[in-house]
Image 1 (tube, rainbow, N blue to C red):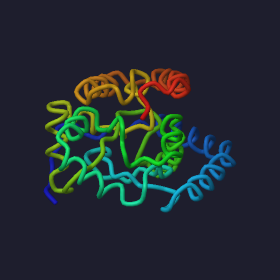
Image 2 (cartoon, rainbow, N blue to C red):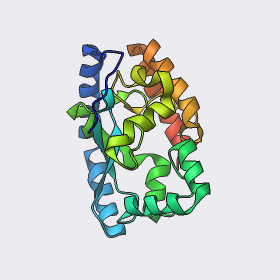
Image 3 (tube, helix red, strand yellow):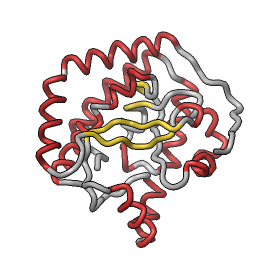
Amino acid sequence: MQQHTFSQPIRHKIFKRLFDIFFSLTILIILSPLYLLLAIFVKCSSKGPIFYTSRRIGRKGKLIDCLKFRTMEKGADAKLTDLLASDPKLAAEWALFDKLHQDPRITSLGKFLRKTSLDELPQFFNVLTGDLSVVGPRALHIIGSPETYLQELRRIYGDKTDQILSVRPGITGVWQISGRSFIPIEERCKLDALYVQQQTFWQDLKVICKTIPAVLHSKGAF
């Protein structure tokens, strides 16, 4: 794999990390019955594992595996590659939003989990391991060869790439409370860069509080 240099150093904020650990442990303990119930539903609803690991871009370009409750049919990753290669319209939608509005790979239960964002609850384990933060820039999907993912990221983020990659990506962020999946990647990039510049503990609390109604209203979730 090619080596990449970054113009900005990794940003370390001890208090933010301590908050991430405390907040995630609290969520995992309080919602443990819900985790168990969802795991049973996913297992019984369709063939395949309970959890799905989504390959994403983490801090300083590190490849990370984000844990989620499985919402798609078995073999969904291979099917996505075929879909994007065979349908230019879907490929353009993926390039614009990093998602498909009407994704044919999603199961019936998966549609509900995505609409309510319950599929993302296991990502609090990723926060404990240090791959994610509770609040941060959105972690982009990895499609294709690992050797070319950073070049693709620089194409999307441009001169803001190093700035955005200087912090951990988040389970939620400014993009989550500003339209979620309806926001084009270019606009999401601007929001993420602005967050990195202005990030404070109080801003993170504000984002967390605003995430709750955004999830309940399900706007931009698919």
